[in-house]
Image (cartoon, rainbow, N blue to C red; front, side):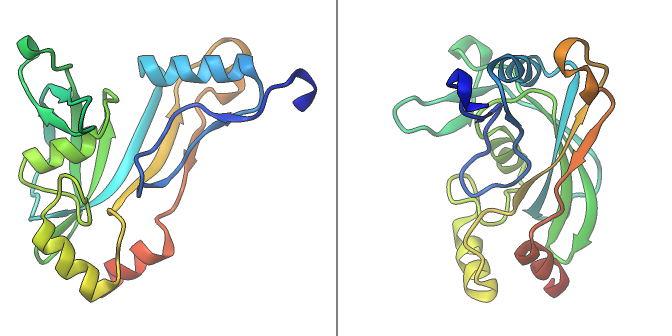
Length: 189
């Protein structure tokens, strides 16, 4: 409703070159409530699909503190005593393709570039990731499949029990299917 001067706005962000769900609020009160939910992570779950390099066999709990370099915008695994913030990502294999694995990644915390840094640090970089990926492999993947993004997709957002103005979202789950290009690549693999 533009009569009160509010423009619908996203309640959270995705990294550049990441596809998937973004939730917008139509009024300020809803935006503030949604931002609080995304910040606390208590009653909301976000899952991502990613294609990673390597053969991931088991579910991993990636519990590595992250530190952002404000000058470069790059994030690295560091020590809490150096000012890093706790970060936890749970990653599960979905399907194997020779030297790649399609994974579900569940963000328990929500730090900048968290999934990308955690997977890279664990030895399973995301295909096409231009900051934390395997650059040589990305180049080959780009040439073979004409794929220029990173294979990271915000697939689901699930609300648990919520009170107040947004209570109608309680126990609702929203899902965005993988984009056509990513689905085509999986078929070719």
